[in-house]
Amino acid sequence: MASKLGQRVIAEAALAAIDADGVEALSMRRIAQDLGSSAMSLYTYFPDKNSLLDGVTQLLLAEVEAPPEDAHWRDAMRHIMRAVRLVGLRHKNAAVLIRRFPPHTPDALVFVEAGFRAFRRAGFDALSTARCYRALAAYSLGTIDIELGGYFTAESRVITGNAREDIGSASSDRLLPLVTEIGPTLNEQDDAAEFEYGLELLLDGFADAMARAGRTV
Amino acid sequence: MASKLGQRVIAEAALAAIDADGVEALSMRRIAQDLGSSAMSLYTYFPDKNSLLDGVTQLLLAEVEAPPEDAHWRDAMRHIMRAVRLVGLRHKNAAVLIRRFPPHTPDALVFVEAGFRAFRRAGFDALSTARCYRALAAYSLGTIDIELGGYFTAESRVITGNAREDIGSASSDRLLPLVTEIGPTLNEQDDAAEFEYGLELLLDGFADAMARAGRTV
DNA sequence: ACCTGAACACCGTTCAAGT
DNA sequence: ACCTGAACACCGTTCAAGT
Image (cartoon, rainbow over all chains, first blue to last red; front, side):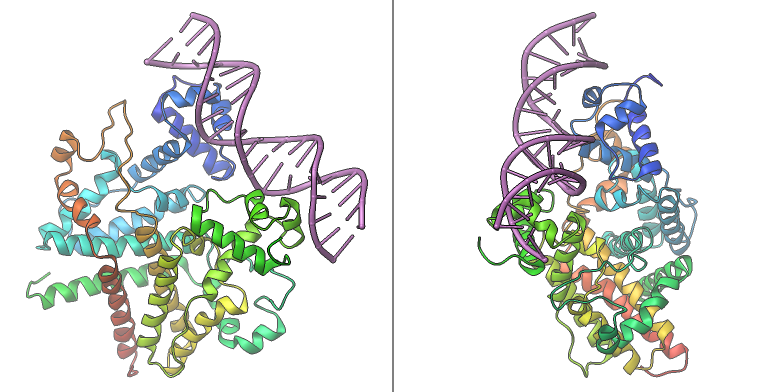
């Protein structure tokens, strides 16, 4: 046995297995084997597989680097958004878990608390802070789908038969000329640059809204 | 047998089953049973379960209502974004599939083509169109996670033992006062209103960028 | 071409038994 | 309290056989 069993050790072994072979290949038996233990021993520390995956996610979220305490809210939020994206890139196979399990352990919430603090320091009230945080969270989670889930790059799956045809076929070129023209452009985008583009739009919008509300940020 | 087997009939049965009992409860045997057939008969029409789920997703995306052909780009994109969200709300259990399988059949791409057309009519070039579409897609997919995945409402899962504690505990109130204060606010947000808020920020940003590029939109 | 039931190689989890 | 192997009730998919 590699190390004394415990939530942390088990979640770390699961994360390593996911990094190596993907979430789909993860099984309780597989983790146990990697730890030199039995599948059922894991149930001493996690009530079920879902909780274990949640535990892995908390581990991931704890890796998100918090911004410096004195940062301007714009720099702080940019810092956090980039940090989440980087954790996803560091754990490409595990990133999808971030969409499923929100942060809820103290370690995983450090960056959230820091982000809230940056907003409040700048004069955002609780409602504005929640509103801005939500918009950023939506954009961040969607970015994971697009970049790590290969939303635009996924080979278009062929559904043959019936009257159905796929992109790239002669008739779809005729019916969907702009999809045919712009689709490839979406594949070739620079992920980092496009991420920054949308992020700055949102931050600009928050700043404008605050300015309109009569406060300087 | 309810109706002659085929991709469409099978995908519709699968969607009905997912609507009723969720993606997790869907099995090839279950669909076959609903259709009065055998699990293996499905493999005549889909190579595997993943393709079938993709087919269900194309069905969902084909439900997305396209905007009127003469709409201003802003109205067109607002229309599409709301339409996607409404399909998700109509199929709460199936909505998660939208994140996994991009549109690729002609029917499912109708709204995409219409969106591209609206941008191009307004003078956006191919690159700007791709860029704006991507930012909106990220926001839309992330919204599904937050609203339908219950990102903020999910009961904080308890991870006991070790030095770990959860939100709401005495010590996290001390360590994470703003999470404690603002967390409940996130739960109580009006989903539709918050969705509109972030959406308009992005649309404002596109308009500003176009204006700065010297074009009137 | 289309459909079938049996079988294979897995799952997560319950259980009864051990320490 | 912690860990175990066997067993249960499932999976998706392959196969050999049918029409």
